Every structure is written in structure tokens, then in C-alpha cells.
Length: 120
Image 1 (cartoon, one colour):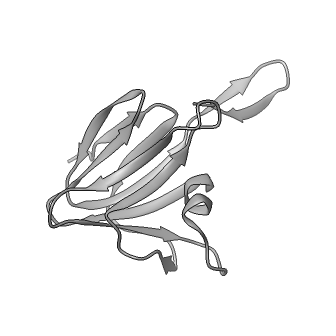
Image 2 (cartoon, one colour):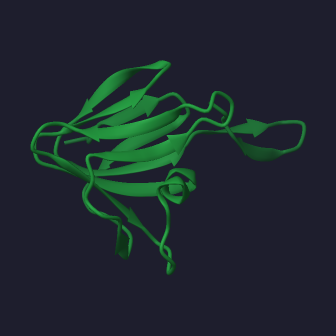
């Protein structure tokens, strides 16, 4: 069975079978998974009642919440009843309990022949 893929502005979120990373951020009720470079708004995964969100990352040094949001890819786990992805300019998306990968959308610039991050 194919796992769902969600698009939330410039964020793409995949449900995955396992987490890839060696460090876990603390359990929290809200995890910022993306910062808006243009608007200053953020993409947040907010845990529902009796739920938690856990960020997983591949860095040898301790990272801040903003560091997690700026990573090219971020794994996170939703534990419990689920969570909602929120942003001031996008409709909320409900995520069930499970493992997820967030990546930033990219686009190809034919003039520079390079991939560039989509800016939200």
C-alpha cells in the first residue's frame, strides 16, 4: 500500500516506514518544521490532545528548534492521536500517528542550470 504524500506550501511531507537519524529532539506539543523566508511565518506540526511530536536529526551537535526547521530534510514522529500541520497561509493537514520526512520543495532554474529552494 502506498503511503501518503502531503504538500504544504514549500514543504513536502512523506509518510515513511522508519526514521533515519541518530539524535532525537525532545518530545513536544509543537515542532517547527519550516520557516518562511519571505513571510516570516512558520510551518508547525502541532500535536493533538494526548499526542507528542519528536524531531529526529543527523547532527553531532545539539540543535535548536530553528536549526531543525532549516534542515534540508527532517524526520519526525507523531505519537498518539495525531497532529496537524499549520501555517498562516495554508489549510491545516491532519497527520495520523507514524513516521514522516519533511523536505523543502526545489525547482530547476534553466538559466543557472541549478536547483533552487522554493521560497514560501
